[in-house]
Length: 117
Image 1 (cartoon, helix red, strand yellow):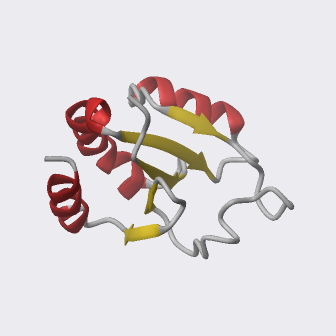
Image 2 (spheres, helix red, strand yellow):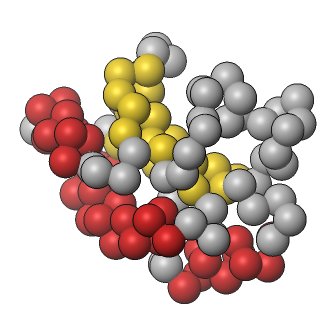
């Protein structure tokens, strides 16, 4: 099944709220991945690549992960206006942003439940 929605998870290995939220993110991924949800992790760990890799393994993150480099022409945090971590952006198939979420994921839970029944 082609993904209907992409959840972009802006996080860092050093970000305790990010790491604390990973078990819930894994639950969401397992619940909705076959219903049209894909997750992409975008890390702000360009100076700590070993810590980033270790966090992915330790937290057992099953979705795609990228380390684009901060303050580069390809840094996705700029067009999405990311100023704090964690921040999650939900994008629909047409590329439209339909949700922006930070540490509290209750609104994300409700939106995914409504969209991916």
